[in-house]
Amino acid sequence: MAERSTGRSMDLYDSWNWRDKWPSRLLLWLLIVIQVVLAFTPWSVIAVLYMMSWRAEAAIGRWPRPWVDDPKFIVHNDQFYDYLYDLPITVFSIACVSGILLPALTFALHGIFKLPRIWSISLLVFYTLGLVFFMMDPGQRLKWYLD
Image 1 (cartoon, rainbow, N blue to C red):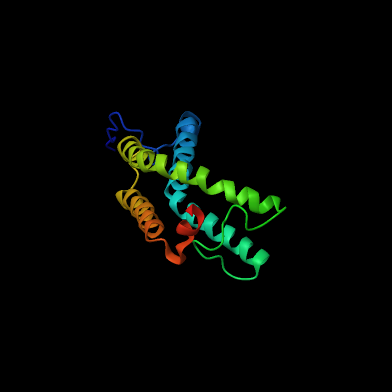
Image 2 (image 1 turned 60 degrees about the vertical axis):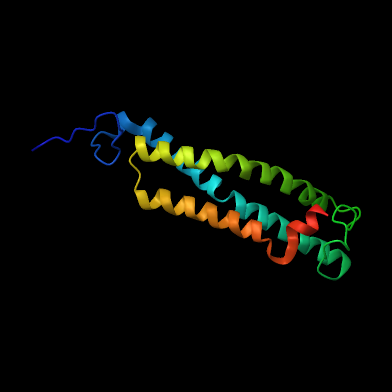
């Protein structure tokens, strides 16, 4: 029976003794979770903007319009809306940083842990589609938030 040479990469699929490799498996799953969270960040910004719009609609009775309804002062005495108002800046900052971290993490995971190439490409495409969708600004939610 021929043994496979793993070189510097960590071959996690060919382990018969799980006690020796559980730290590397834990690290792999932690990095994969971080990678997926980073891929979802542009979609999270969109979701937060729509949740904020939905909450404003519940308060004023119609969908908020850009240049007419100021998002900061549209809802009074609502802590949930105040939280939603502050959240897009934080999530957008994470989305900007993830534009650098996601490709770096994807390259590292593909090189060290030999993840399937389709996984890496699909997460990068998912992130890019979210970024394009965010820049298209459907429903003018970003325009409304920034007015």
